[in-house]
Image 1: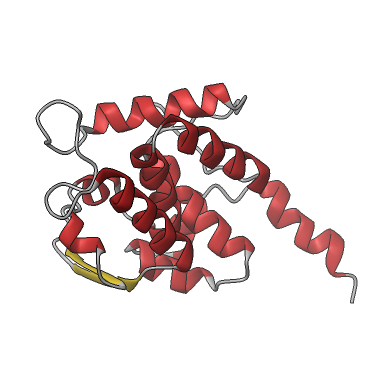
Image 2 (image 1 turned 90 degrees about the horizontal axis):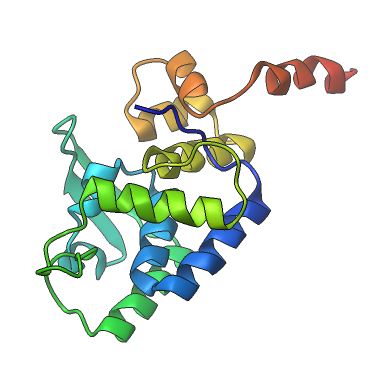
Length: 181
């Protein structure tokens, strides 16, 4: 399995969103909800319309079995609204495959994200885990304490979270260089 990275550049995130929206709103919503929720792809793909028509998502994580309950951002609410309006969906799998209405597979989701990244000229490895890593990375860059991100991602230690979200030695070294008290 290829090690993937977060998308660090906000312009690349906007480029991915623009490209995916041009493809279809389902793929745009997959990306948007993924980078704004930090959900694992297994939990993201099993979401139903009923799970997202409220202002919160409440699920039981597939990997950990833990309950997860969080509010939807305005960006997510808008993307969900656009998608549901366009598709007319009122129940069932949120990210339905075109073949039979079953949820997208992990492989399909990977192809969608990886192809979009290539189309946008992103050189770093991009896959389904990129969504979750991008969420954690940008939360950290926006000043969210690493222990909070650790809790959101259900990691056991802050060091695991730092490694997971791809904080590089150069980024840590920059603290020493720029502090200058």
